[in-house]
Length: 552
Image (cartoon, rainbow, N blue to C red):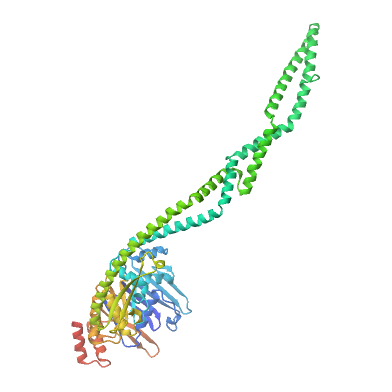
């Protein structure tokens, strides 16, 4: 609900602070007094284009602040949170818009910088403005389906779930078919690659093991000749150990002849022992470094095969085993892809059937709600002197390509204004007065539709008077029981129904023309309604009639 509107330096308004309450608020004044300025100012707060022409002449900027009281669980709370702003529960919503004389503008939501785009997103949840040239709200066919669903208390949740499941199943099928097409094109290559890799049978870590073993055998090949030469020096008939043994045998025969010879024999024995130990170590090393040329060749061949196929597939040799598994799975999918696609096709058919059944049930419920809505609107037309007019809610099936999470129906409000005239969209009504009354009839019938809680009717009573104006006033008053209404009116019958009356008037000080708004008390309301009845000169009869309207 709009609770306050503060305006600074907008066109003819220098400074204005208004407070609004629940019920029916009426705004009256002579033609040209500036009622449209108020709506333009409120439009700025609701995200309208920032026109520098709205800045009062001589002022640097225009400022509009609108305050709204939000109920519990209002949809705006989520919308504000989604845009990264904060709104405490129970806190009023305060929108501030600044327009500079040079055309720049800024917007704030509860003192947090916001975009004009966000204000436009918030606007439909806060205020509905209905006038003779309004092409939004009830006149926009895109919103008729939602209005009918809310009127009929229809839940679109199940149909949305069914639609999502259907589309997800179709996406899975499309992906599987695309993969199958690619796989089929690669089938020959896959078959060759898998056969080649299976024949090779690569193992994780195999390349490293082969490389180490090959390097070891290559080292053995390199030093084998040197070890053989050393062995010949030690063990040959002319080798060192053989010579030492001969010397030892000679010394054994003569060692007793001199003590020094015994020492020499002991030293030779020690040398033989060390030499024999060295010979054993060399033989052990030779055994360890011994290699089979055939084994070396086999390892080298295997290593070159692994590295060659790895280069072919642009992977590391250690990744070949994993590649074989991956390619085998792809080949299996190709070979069994038909069965998988068949299962997905069945899933799509089932999801499609589930959606179709849910959508048909929703369509039937919409048709029933449309009948009730047509009756409710028809009830309102006669008192508004639209006896010959007819209203209908069209619920038609859409092409399957247009089915959505809201069902398979197109919904549009249509009217026929004269007997025998064809039905046409609501927006095609030529007469402004008729259009305004149709809008009012619809709003009364949709009083529980749950939209914005503040409704503004701009001169909805233009071109009508007497009983029709009285009927309009009665319905506006009734509608104000479910929403806050603000009505710009020239009709005394409508003005008399208001629970709050604001007078818009111009004033001149010889230099500057200003527009002001004055809340009226009971006596002042009587005078204003009398003026609306009689014109410039207020007569006693007009005052008496104003009293009767207020009393009624």
